Image 1 (cartoon, helix red, strand yellow):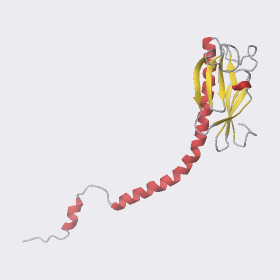
Image 2 (tube, rainbow, N blue to C red):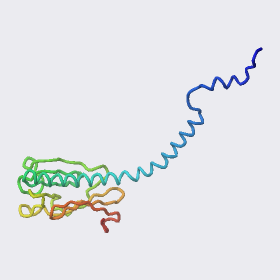
Image 3 (cartoon, helix red, strand yellow):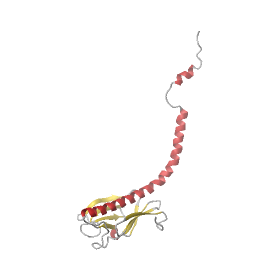
Image 4 (tube, helix red, strand yellow):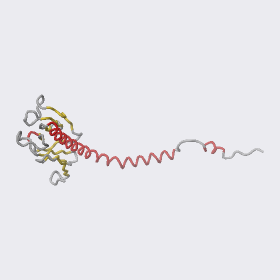
Length: 183
């Protein structure tokens, strides 16, 4: 007896490996939807992240200057260059505020800020802040090196302020209303 071969067409597809077209379309559709949801969040997050990264970098380099001043028993300073959006950390050998190439000893030179971050404000004389061999702001040797602040902004008008007090304490403050209220 000869057995009839009905549905033999389906048997040859039974052991095939792979994905069906329907499965591929569903997965790609889900990926498209998730991407459409995630991209606006990422775009708004990136400028804020760059601003916070730059502020934290300056904060860390100010602490580096303070630690190196104590360790090496000499004055260490950080000078900001708002035009180029960079700064330099150095040992102040000559006692004159500001970095003098060839005289002062650089610790870190021309450190750039993140893209889109600007130095917009400072109450530092000649944009320089320094620490003496006890980790305090120098008082007698160079009156230009006083307590102060440096403000950083990004395209979303968020402002971060790196504040240095007379005892050498460094803090980061935030303002989202143009600098009226700080937290």
